[in-house]
Image 1 (cartoon, rainbow, N blue to C red):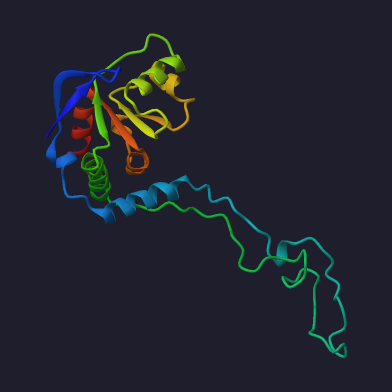
Image 2: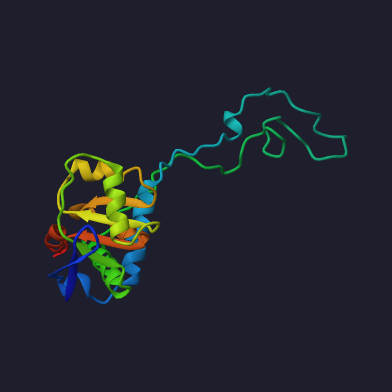
Length: 208
């Protein structure tokens, strides 16, 4: 399929970018998307949560009251989970939440996410550009020119450009990613996917 190429002012350049149907126009696989997003979010978790069990609580080991004759339940320790300040029963422990996912499933998920963006017409292509110096105002002008101000945007650039990254990193709802590093979560989380012209070939090479 073909899609119009815009300049950074949002004007049509009269040229078309060809998108590979095997990457951008396939039948989306929802389960593959679910698994890839689940893995991405699981990998973000630190897993450092911890609560103390009764053996780890500081406190006296003296028996609280006599075993029999009180008319109430027996109580052997102030560290009991039943008492305030006592240990936690089956509390969280540090653990690793990450899990493995087949590479082919991850590729299928990313193709599916890109295809959804095409189906929903939430994708645009802009011609490659450079910024001479990092300046947030320049990037805001680009966002305004493309009429995506206030929306969550993911701009995909073909190669590392420090000036572009520094210009956009402090703007709310803006994310910039390399063509070889895009992931399913970021693509789906963005309201608008902005592809720099040179990034299309790199995405297709990576996913094919």
